[in-house]
Image (cartoon, protein in one colour):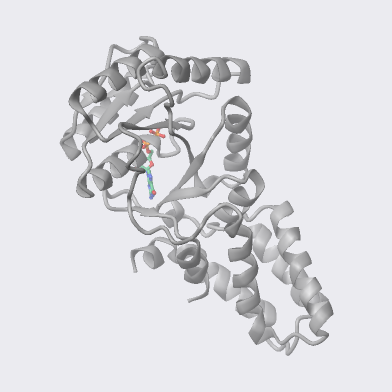
Length: 304
Ligand code: GDP
């Protein structure tokens, strides 16, 4: 029920618009499809993904000849879940890490302000609650505030953090963090990195170097490169996904601030377009407001 609350705005907007779009209509015709297209685009699903969904519904309308509007919800649900299926298995509910990797190293990337630090703090808290020992690494050394904020979360969750002075080499912090984690026999390492979107080559070089240096300690690190995106920023989030996937191999997404937006459809569009699984969604500022992304629950929450 936290998920429903977190997605309240998207849910009410999406559903009420959909209801309006089919009002007085008994079957899915061109006008309904046009309205649907507009609803999906205005929910930030993205044009490409929207057109894909509309096309699939058109195909079903063509096959069935007559498609009642009361069936539209069901079909939309199936199509959206189907799109997400390509990247997300959908059954995830718990905060778990693979047992074979120890320490399991998560490198977190994303621009300032998207909720990166908060997501790391929430995630560390969940992992700790699940019984894992967690170490944080403050390798976003560009801003003193980034290091201090991460420290606050480390204190709050009561876990160790490895940090150096502002301006120090991010790769050096990452190296120290992994060494510390190995010596403590820690289960999970979460490394905060590169908060600025400088030019692509610099970003790429910095992330590549951090990875290379980490591999001197844990040879297959990082096990996950998680990009944090602000779900309320629509096209900016798409743009950031484009830039970061060009700079490094992003293996998962965390989409934040879905509680503050009616445009939760961005999750569908980004996951579809970049073929990267969404692992976590942020639905509030509190420490508990992070959820493992479950596509069935997510899609259902739109239609409840
Ligand atoms: P960073 O610069 O990317 O590290 O961003 P922060 O973690 O400092 O977060 C920026 C702001 O966004 C803070 O005020 C957070 O409380 C807020 N924030 C982060 N995640 C969420 C979320 O899921 N929902 C809401 N409403 N606010 C969030």
